[in-house]
Image 1 (cartoon, rainbow, N blue to C red):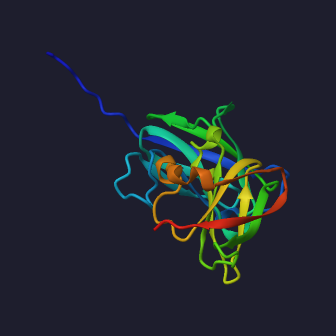
Image 2 (cartoon, rainbow, N blue to C red; image 1 turned 30 degrees about the vertical axis):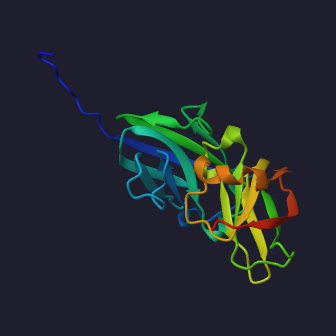
Image 3 (cartoon, one colour; image 1 turned 90 degrees about the vertical axis):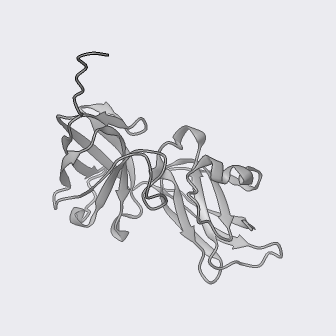
Amino acid sequence: MDNLRLSPESDAEGRGQFRTEHAEKLKWSLLSFTLGSGEKEPEYDMNWPGPSTRGQLKADGSFDLRKVPPGKFRMTLNSDPSAQTFYIKSVSLAGRDVTDSGFSVSGGSWSLEVVLSSESATLEGAVLDSKDQPVADAVVVAVPDAEHRNRRDLFKKASTDQHGRFVLQGLRPGEYSALAFDEMDDDYRDPEVLKPYQDQQVTVRVDKGERKALALKLIATQ
């Protein structure tokens, strides 16, 4: 082709405001967030395909981001212990709900409104081996239903204590698959990683503010 001119996509500038659903008090300056894109998160794969932008909240819950690369993003809260029982209930861009769909940016400026809810659910219980003995240091994961597996912020992970007990906090109300492994070094949010263990998962539904107990059998990965 002759006389073809290519123009690079420019970075964008973003700003936004976090608030709690029922005006609960949070020390916002202790909270940070990630706008992530791609199938791998940096903690699992340093060569992941999508861009990522991390931001820190100001004392009033607002934020500013500069030089956001072009791409499609979803919001993940990197919560301080003070906010572990909160989950992202909604993310709005110019009045449009982008909580599940994510949003695309390419140059210009944009503004988000993020609402956190304290009405999260909790899963707790014990991990037992084949002899019904408690297992310490097992890895327990909660995987959201198929409709919400594009939201990596909804996946939860915890380890059992010396008594084989675990607690998974900050769950968005809904349906989850719970599994317990002797170890899990791979990205458990990748459907292909968990596919071999589908028959061993425990399906559980949790409602707003519910605390539900369950016992999980240990899955050996070796």
